[in-house]
Figure 1 (cartoon, rainbow, N blue to C red):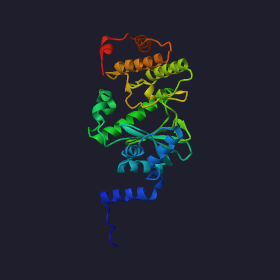
Figure 2: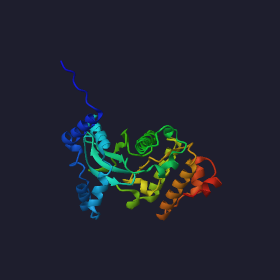
Figure 3: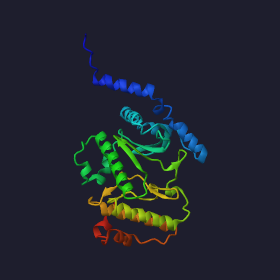
Figure 4: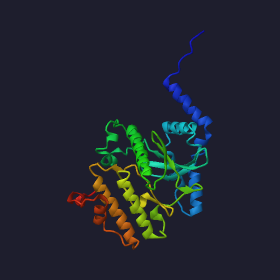
Length: 294
């Protein structure tokens, strides 16, 4: 009986891609019709954007390896299907999807085609999780996605109000969707707060839990990285650093100044930034932290 000819790696990859494109129609062109999704959301909120630009940006992260990852997540019954794009950014796009049990998901896909390493080096200095990664773009992005998942997991375990982390594979982070019926709740910056003082105290409670229980500093906290439901959720936590990071105190003071500035603009009687820093850390603010400029 003649021996069966072994398939080359290239043939296997081509067959896997063909399987994704032909059989898994729920995670291909139809479900990634970001243009139509944007139109639906825009019609509902009466906002105008360039639909063709939104489509181009939304599809830019879906290379062959990413589609393969999504396909495998569906085979593992983590994702059932995806409905389209929620938001686009320079580092990642976020998509809405459903799990097999019908629960809504947020699926964050980092770009492997854009060089984001240079601007993020300050967040990984001294972080042991980055000590041995290869310095190529794809390896860095995979490690960065894993860092976000680990940070989310630490925060969630510490009872910080963040989206529940579900899994991370390569450049894809799957988490709880903070919204309803495929529409995300707004960012704090886009919403009029019903009770600003109450919300301010809630932000401080989460900041304290993040610092003391999770052992993390958000490092980019502002009204742009909090969802308002009116419950407060901290999001975009990939750049968060451990407390022994050389810039942890500097990042913390920046976060505090951002929070203080925002709530002061809403006429809330805020704690002064330096006082809040000392209250949180138990240490006075140093000249080094005060003088640092980004």
